[in-house]
Structure formats: C-alpha cells, structure tokens
Image (cartoon, rainbow, N blue to C red):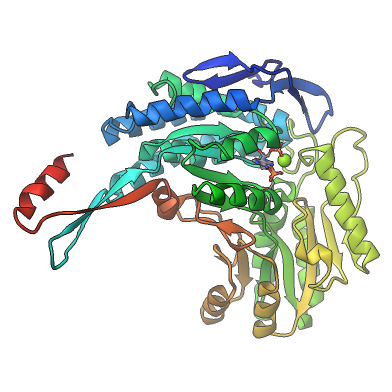
Length: 494
Ligand code: NAP
Ligand code: MG
C-alpha cells in the first residue's frame, strides 16, 4: 500500500500529464501529522485555457459523444472497477490528504464500482428522444450533451465528488475540466489514469489543480457550457454570478445548517443512532450534517443525553489507525474557523455540555473535540451559519408546528430529518420543511436519488436521475406533419 502524494507540477491536459506553465505551487500538509507531504501546481489562466481548449476540441469533434452509449458505459465502469480494486491505495491517499479515517476512505473507494454500475443503468434508462404531438405536426424533443463541463470540487468527499462531476457527464457524452480542492489534489489521479487505461480519448477529461484563482479562470471561460460546483455558499454566490453573466448552465451544491426535528414521541435509541452518523460522520465535515437539533421542551434533557452518547461512540484518533472512526479536521484554517464559531457561541451565551476544545493527548494534528452546545437560540450565529465541523446545537421547541417554523427559519435548505414513531407526523414534517433532501428517523444519503438544496444551499440537483439530466440539453425539432413517420424513423436511427 502506498499513498499517491508527492511533489510535482503536473496537470492533466489533452490526454497527458504535463507541467504547469507557471511557478506557483500549493503545499499539501497531512492533517494528522502536520507534515508537508507534497506539492502541486496552482494552474495559471494559461493552463486553464489549454485544458478548456482540449475539452472543447474533443467535444466539438464528437470523438466521445458519438460513441455508442454502451462503449461509454464500459469505459466508465472499467475505470471505476479499477479504482475499487486499488481501494487501499486510494483510501491511504485520501487519508493523507484530508485526514479521513482509513476505514472510511477505503470503504468509500470500494463503492465506486457499484456506483458506476448504477450510473450506467441510469444512462441506459434516460429518454433520448420524445415526441410531443401538435396541430402542425409532431415535435421531436431530442437530448444532447450539454457540452464542456467545468467541475469545481470541495475536499470532504473527493472520490464521490469526482464520480458525479467526471463520470456522470462522461456518460452523457460531455467533456470535462475538473478542479479538485487544494486539500485533495492527488486522489482524483487514480480515476483519471484508470479512465485513460480504459480507453478514454484524449481531451475528454482534463484536471487542473489550483486555488480559487484557477477556479475563477475555469468557470468564467467562454468555452465552458456548464458549471458544476460543490462548495461553500460564499464561493457559490460568486460562481453563480460569473456563470449567469455567461449564460452557462449551472449547478450549485452548497452548504447547510440542517435541522434534526425530534418530536415528542421519538424513540431515543433511533435519535441516538441517527445523530451519531448525521452529526459527527467525517468529523462533521458533511454538507448535509444534522447540526441543529430541535428537541421537544418536555424531552430536552433526554435529547441532549442522546446526542452526547452519539458523540461518545466515535473513536477519535490517528486516521491511519484502522480502529479510528473520527479523524482530525482537514486543515489548520478549518480548525481555526470551527474554534472561532465555538468561542463566538459561548460569548453569545451558549454552554458546551460536551467538548468545546481540543482533545487531550494530541500534540500534533488538527483535532477538535465533538462539541454539543446548549443555551442556543435559533437567531444566534452558531445556529445560522455552517460550522463544517463536529459541532451541534440543541434548541428546544414547543410542538410540531414550532419545530417546523424553527427548521425553516434558516438561510439554508439542504437537508433535514424528523424523528418520530408516527408515519403521519413524519410525513407532515417532511413535507413542510423547505429543503431539497430530507430523511425520516435517521441520516441516510442515497446517491441513486437526487441530492441538493434550496435557498442558500444551492441550485439544481446532484446525483440520481435529476443530476444526470442536468448534463443534457433538450432540443426541439419540429417535424412536418406530412411524412412524419419517415422523419421519426431517421431520428431514431441517428
Ligand atoms: P470552498 O472553499 O467553497 O471551495 C470549493 C472549491 O471552489 C475549491 O476547489 C476552491 O478552491 C474553489 N474556489 C474558491 N473560490 C473560487 C472562485 N472564486 N471561483 C472558482 N472556484 C473557487 O469549499 P470547501 O471548503 O472546499 O468545501 C466545504 C464546503 O463545501 C462546505 O460549505 C460544504 O457544505 C460544501 N459542500 C456541499 C456539498 C453539497 O452537495 N451541497 C457537498 C460537499 C461539500 P480554494 O479552496 O483554493 O478556494
Ligand atoms: Mg477551500
């Protein structure tokens, strides 16, 4: 086993790894050891231009989109299977990059082959042509790949993000320029090399590492047709403005402050199990994390005890140790931000009933204690802004209606959950909370269904049928009434 991190300035452009034309480099520092473990290039606008030009050429000459769908599926499947077969190395790389426990990072890498299998089935079932009848003749509604896709990614789930920002558009026949986050610049290389080995033509996928400036050059490039961005709401707003000016198709998967609505008939064991994963998985660095727990006033203490038990079940430690389930956060900057939020909450009147600081016994690594804050009201900064760490607030509510009101009193609308033993009450709350995704009695992420948010959590949907459909453009071809059958036959064969 070896982590694929190191020192180079290579970008993947037009089918080959080639050096950046600039001198800027980004350090990669391992979150658990604080050691410098590698460096990558920060791609210049010139590099980005070369990558977009390669993608554009490969899309315009149809070297990929004209292949039979089954051929495209085979390339993606073979590549994903190869990455799955290398799951130990992939996991070690991700753990070195962003500190995710090795059990999690290898486990997630092992799922990629199955994810590709699902994506292939989705592609097969996608309706390519539809006919809408009209008085003057039928209209054929054909679907065409959206074109050159700019994928800009965060660091908290690098392989899953690469699947939805590289493999999904590939299945649709698009060409891609992908910018991984500077925290996780290496892990995507496993997928890129596997795609090349599987026969992906040159130029169809390009990777540029870099910081925000690289991302800006990419999303503002006139030859990019669609921007698929996952990241913070602040950056999403900027990207949305840039993409809007260029009339680019846009998908923004942004932050959240998702509520877990606990009703007074909830089973506390289910609450405890659901919030264990929902609030603390990946050290709380999950966009959909349930970080605002709304507890019935009559059972408030029981809920706080359940959340504390959830936190206590995690084994915090060295992410390279297979016994560890909770690692450090991804960077020094990230820890500072989390600690700033906790300090601010305490200054606003909150109390940490668990955690609130750094765990004992770790003199290296960006560790944060799982933290539970009480004495919080929904208007405090800690209840409104995304912390992106293992920090949960518990806020009392006075019944289902009040809980729904509090859940909706948020700038965000990504995810949420309800805990109750009544299906009627579960469905009522699930329908009334305004989010793009919702879970009943737990925390379940299903990448076969659409995922995404409303309000400040974004625009559009990732994954699932809706996510796949976003890589297509519809074109209406109005056919003459006379001889319509001959035209439809031609279209079916096209
Ligand atoms: P981020 O700081 O917003 O960055 C995301 C990506 O955008 C990075 O590659 C970043 O590079 C790049 N970027 C920054 N400024 C840019 C600009 N002006 N133009 C183009 N690209 C730019 O987010 P992050 O810290 O990596 O990830 C955490 C955030 O992602 C959280 O808010 C989380 O909720 C969100 N997230 C959402 C979902 C979802 O599906 N809704 C899933 C996962 C994560 P730099 O880092 O160098 O700035
Ligand atoms: Mg960042």
